Image (cartoon, helix red, strand yellow):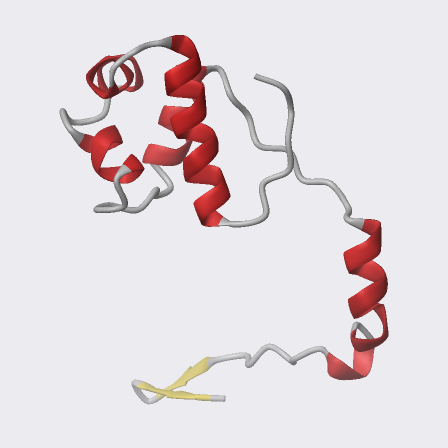
Length: 103
């Protein structure tokens, strides 16, 4: 499998499906290798379950895949003007007073 851009969740799941097809393995084999429950990979690939913080690295590792983040220069130019310090949200800092939270 050659590197390719993934632009969203659907692309990510499709890349996983394509890798499983390329390796000619079953979903059950991926479950066994990744340590996930039987049927987990199939549910993800058939959109009945979502990838989570445990299943994502497990499935990627079992298939010999990795995620890489890169800058999309064209997209960055589209949003660059909106990314100014004045548009950043301030984090609300919480502190406890007499058992109640105040910002």
